[in-house]
Image (cartoon, rainbow, N blue to C red; front, side, top):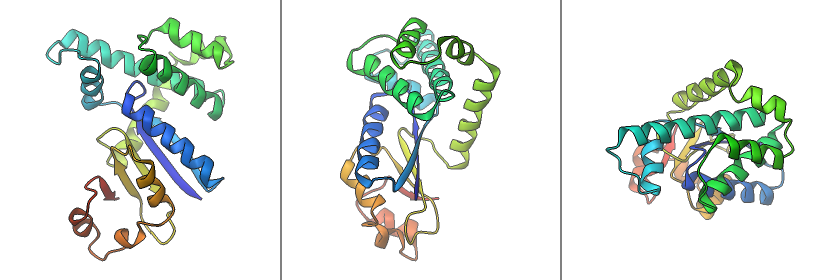
Amino acid sequence: MLELYLFINPIGSTCYHSEQIIIKLADELQNKIRFRFIPFLNLAATVSVMEENSIPLNNLDLRNHVFNQAYQASLDYKAALFQGKKRGRRFLLNLQHKIIDEKLTYSEKLAQRIADTCQLDNEMFSHDRHSDFTINSFHQDMQMAAEMHVHAFPTIVLYNLNGIDCGVSLTECTSYQLLADLCTGKMNDLLNFQNKIDQIKKHSNPHLHIL
């Protein structure tokens, strides 16, 4: 079974689009892929959200505010996951829908409202979204991102591709067809070249990397 990790900024529009691509692909591959959406933050995530919303990049107060929103949204998603993967994913997608599609501003009130919609245990969610355990879990995700050399958003990391004995990462993936070709082995010849990295650079996708 394919193992797929998508590293996301939980309030970023490109990541939201990539999540929908992966969910569609997982449905079509019918239990041949196991996937996780993993929150990961850095300066690039903050800058991306500011650019998407036409926020001046030189305003440090606003930059800190955007970072704090993304950070708390990450903890909220982690807290929702503690009540089940499907509920956690539903919470994330609902939160992104409100922020990205409906242009609402992230807030604790919005997070609580979505928790209600997703039928989360409110008392548990309210506690977990600020708990040390949740914060530590998020830090573990950040460590995983570092180990997988994740720097950009969104980044997909794949393991257990047929005939490929290493991990493969794909950055800035917004193409359903590209990801489908990768997951179904149509790009294996490219990945199996003896001099993998040099050969990949000569082809049309500079975002594809061997781990």
